Length: 318
Image 1 (cartoon, one colour):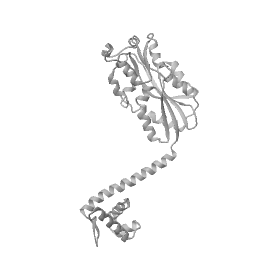
Image 2 (tube, one colour):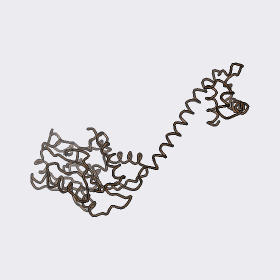
Image 3 (cartoon, one colour):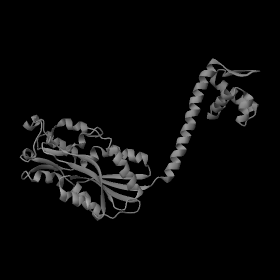
Image 4 (cartoon, one colour):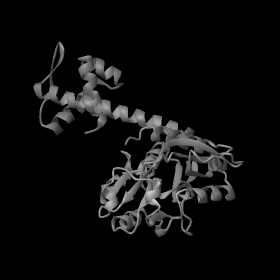
């Protein structure tokens, strides 16, 4: 059975006449009649009865007509949507985009966000790479932007450090686009006496070995170092690029760790794994600002990505 035959049936129902329907369909009444007879033979029941007043659908015909109307309506709606998509696709930007981000973001909220972005902009190919904020800025300043291939970074900086704010925001090559304000939380082993605390101070945290994130050449986050520096020297017991190993080390009481509270967001892919450790609020204010470092001369690819991320991050909840 062809879609055209279903359309013939719907047209007959609307016109209530073979002759009127055949005129609208640019068919002879005989051709239309043969098509309907073929449908009835295939179905095994009569669709309608014809008399001098026109046509009258049988009970089976009425039921089948409902399905035919639904199918033909969905068919034409789908064709319209495909045509609109093809028209839009011709105007969408194309190219590639490399996004550098801390493992906290690349493992929690960015995968879903980038998947949604790629679905909306299929002609833009996105590559997500992990790094820490200081290394990200350094890489972006060193690497040349290429036509139709752009590099941007997601970084987190302390709101209270005028020096770091200036370092990241007053940059000749990169522009900072804010996305989210946040804070650190402390993670400790459930076996640790600290797990019973309702909150914890940075001074107390500095008295314990730290489990920290690092880039692939051993650089740790300068943001955490900024908050901890005023409370004394810190000892790193374990550092890793893997959030799974980071959690495992803390769960096994190898040390304590600080992490951006975005890992606990409703859209975080790793929210559940934090059930392995005790998450404790930090007593002091660790005000963090997360944003995108994008080229000063912004291309349409970058523009669409920034706009999309700003909307996406507004939907995050804790």
